[in-house]
Length: 247
Length: 263
Image 1: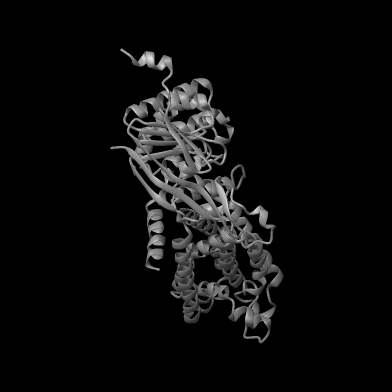
Image 2: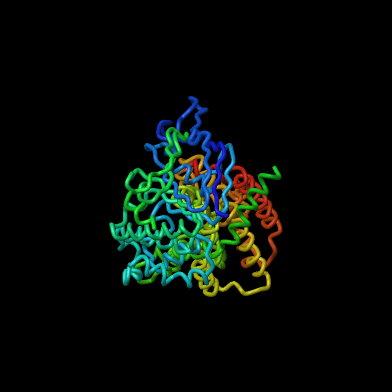
């Protein structure tokens, strides 16, 4: 059963005093959160007591100001950051879209990039082969698929990234502000695929500053501030969607 | 201590299962570096031959000492260029891989192996150049050459450990990229790459005896040029490999989860 359960999760990391000849103020980390302590003993409290539970079909929108901990929380869920305290229990195959360009090589063609991205995601050669045409078709890149990635616009790169990330039907999909890069028709297509994914008992966690995106995609909203959960609420269903859902 | 080693071995074991990833990325790296050039990676061979030829032409001794100098320089340069490349490129390794480290859950050792494969491919062209010079300069092929092959394998086995240690140095001490770069450039003159140590009692004596790189060169060079097994060089290179691997495993096990916050 696909699920995510976070209990009192905190993430604290030390601001390492790197041995460097440059001025100290240039060395602070870029991750958000609260900086505590002073001098050589400075810590960043990036997440503090975060707890929530998601079950199959949930679509959670992470909102909050810059530095609130949205991306940090996504990276904890993905396993990039190891929490300093609390527990993270995840059941299901997780895939993530943090940065459109990660894993893509500028000089390689779109087709070759699908292979590389598949390898990074841990797919077998047979899985890559099997999914290749479906990914190309969904991305609508056509003949561009055999051109170098550097020739792609941001929107085209977003299409390819999303197509690859969702090709293997991840049970849990984590996304960070990526979707704004695509055009309106692709955003609609991407939303439809996310709906399908959620209907197949998946979970989506999406960090965004776009209220309209959160409203159209998500069923729950988690507001973060200073690394703490400020509120966890249900996203009201839009009247149009409610009407189409009713018999 | 045990948990630190287990953590490092877990990272390495997961990396080995993902070998298709780092082999594919390393090949892409080599392709990208020479894309749009006419000779492609063959430039690596041309560069090596140009360097080795210049050194032989300028520094070749006169008289009976001239015999075998071409082979001496060819092997020395091949090993030195390899060591210089892996060490210089490993210091900024984690910074260079920042987007991968912050965006994927690939084990850290993947990046170490990516650079290892990339450096081995590049060194392959130097090996071809070295063989050409050996054939021209004429040391006779003997079974002792197999010891040279064993020496190269020992250097190869040490490579991931060297990369790991210097990559962590670069993550904790960013200025080390420039310090190490300068040291490696200067180090070429303090290592018997193109000069020959004949027991002279001068600065060369200390540069030879107290420089671990001298022994890295000797394990590959002495079997071919002297036809004998360099036990002393193998012992010191083996000990260096063991110490480097121990430090690498401790660093990897202790700090692999911290690197994402350091870069």
